[in-house]
Amino acid sequence: MHSIKDVANLAGVGVGTVSRVINNIGSVKPVTRNKVIEAIRELNYVPNQVARNFKMQRSYLVSLLLPSIFNQFFSELAYHIEDELDRNGYQLLLCNSGGKPEKELYYLDMLKQNKVAGIIGITYNDIEEYIHTDIPIVSIDRHFSKQITCVTSDNFEGGRIALKELVKAGANNVAFIGGATSINSETRNRKKGFIHEAEAMGIPYVVYEEPDPIADDIAFIKRFLKKYPEVNGVFAITDMLAAKYIEIAKRSGLRVPEDVKVIGYDGIQDHEYFHPVLSTIRQPVEQMARKAVQLLLKKIEGESVEHEDFIIAVEYWQGETT
Image (tube, rainbow, N blue to C red; front, top):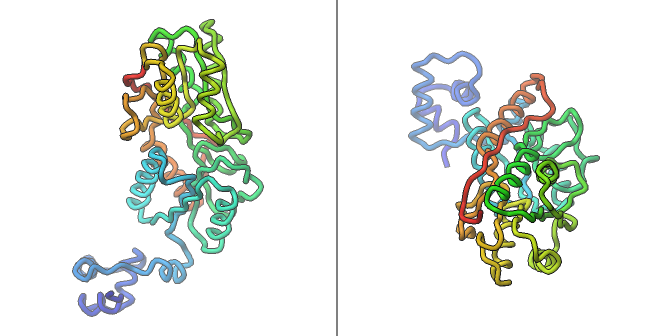
């Protein structure tokens, strides 16, 4: 592996000049800068980010705290967050918590000790008392204190759209199914929007929930089907729960969409699991990701952020299940 001295020797400059080019500080002549950049490319030199942070007393690492990298919505979000950070000269430190609160607390403590520049966090656990504002933080879908900005999709409007689309497809006895969370999460507004529109339209509806996370999706759906056999329109809180519902409903002899219409929420139906292609409320994943990064970088630079919440519009994607 090549060192910064190797780059300096190849470019015919001092180590200090290479350091100034890498860190984009101080004055370097354009011709000299180009020589250094060419030497870096030729040697495929990768700067030591930890040493760089220590020397500059500034970190260019941003942590992304995710419940699971296996969920396609989270992995798509991570992709766009990393890309936007890279465009702005920052690197991503991915922390995959598996949805475990103790692991999230471990990561938060580790991140504070290593002086990351900031954190973008997605958590559905009750860890609010451990979240502090001494490190710039932007959350996704989760409300903490007013000092922590939240980026989210328009969950309430998504619930309203889902109800209207189910009715438009012919459903007249509808249900919302999902996990009930006690934390202040924007995802709760999916149910609220659904109920609001059902009552406004005079459509019979039921809400079927269990504490989040649902311990056994299959058993949960079987109990729902047994209790509410008359339901012919289902809005699931996530695409994955919608897909699981379709699978179990078919085993029970129901046809989708002939007997029951189904809509999910997220917009990840490109995944091979979704056959038939799911009708869904699509979250603007890329827009949410880039907005979260842009807001975090403002906080890192000490700029004020005008709004506590940034709510981004959703859209309905027609699939084969309505």
